[in-house]
Image 1 (tube, rainbow, N blue to C red):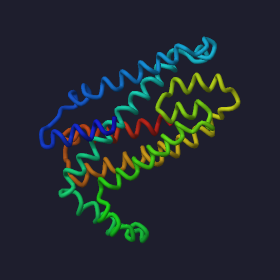
Image 2: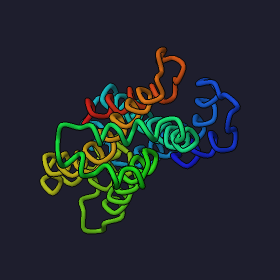
Image 3: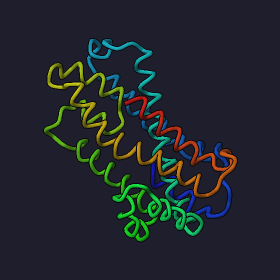
Length: 223
């Protein structure tokens, strides 16, 4: 999904894509994922599924869909950063050089080589690799693996099936570390900084970048 977002920007280049068209592009992926999640959920024992209300499942479906949209917008933002690097790079490096913290100023030469889009890509790759590693870890509880894969409703039903094996606090710690601290926090900060470095006066001029910041903030609230 993230790669699809980047491809939309790289292929279109300077041709503007409306938010509605971007939603139309991502909708099939989101719908397919939710359909598969619902199909698998239907195979769980009735007492496990009944442990949660329809409202709770609907809320998880909603948050999972927003995470898919966030992945798509992250891809759009990184590609946009790469294409507009010549407009923001000097301001990006200057933000490190002019920092009041010595350790941040020390990072300035590295940021000059890495570039803003490279920093965003680094955090996303590290976060995604860690989440994929957790999702395929056969020794981890099933609910952990499902949550890491973005299937929140299935993770809820799996928690009932696993009982004491799935400690919600442990799951919250690892998902919080991998997804929130290494993905949502840097993504929201970098996307909002990108808008600032572009000198955007009207946030609606960059709706996808704005949406990426908002979705990252919503993901923080969810976790």
